[in-house]
Amino acid sequence: MKIEKMKSILKKDIDKERYKHTIRVTETAIKLAKNYKVDTEKAHIAALLHDSAKYKDKDTLLKKSQEFGIILDAVMKNNPHLIHPFLGAELAKVKYNILDEDILNAIKYHTTGRKNMSMLEKIIFIADYIEPGRNFPGLEKIREISFEDIDLGIILAMDNTLKYIINKGWLIHPNTIETRNSLILKRNKII
Image (cartoon, rainbow, N blue to C red; front, side):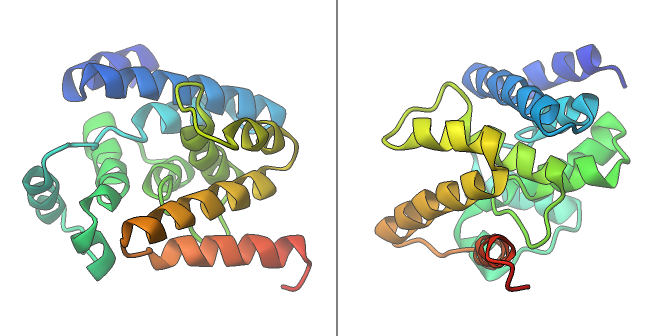
């Protein structure tokens, strides 16, 4: 499916603000892909579809997850925000005919991360975090670092996210902990 057709479908499926966010993530992902010499078309597609299942209604998320046979862990059941990436990967397959596993994994893990992420997965993860529409203390530093050292950018982003999650009293997904730990071990060459 052509990218313009994907955009047309996506505009109907998500709200206007989410679509604007998606375009900003896409632009950021393409810049990062060029910077890290990753296929820009794959980055474009993964970024475009990363929030394709970002439904605001918890019941819709749960119902669609069940329809696609997505097994929700305890953390996802208690934080429905974590469902949309997994559901988005399934929608990408069915609705947009995406079969590339790297693109599907980039969509699936753009919120929690995972151990041993591919460079495309890292790009979509951090592009979603640093896109120009976001603004909070320390973000500019993470934006700069992400173009120099993507692993460090992800670690810093996760540090902020973990503090936020802890302050809210929410559950932390095990993928997030594994991602952060594996990146730190890699950086420290302790693997």
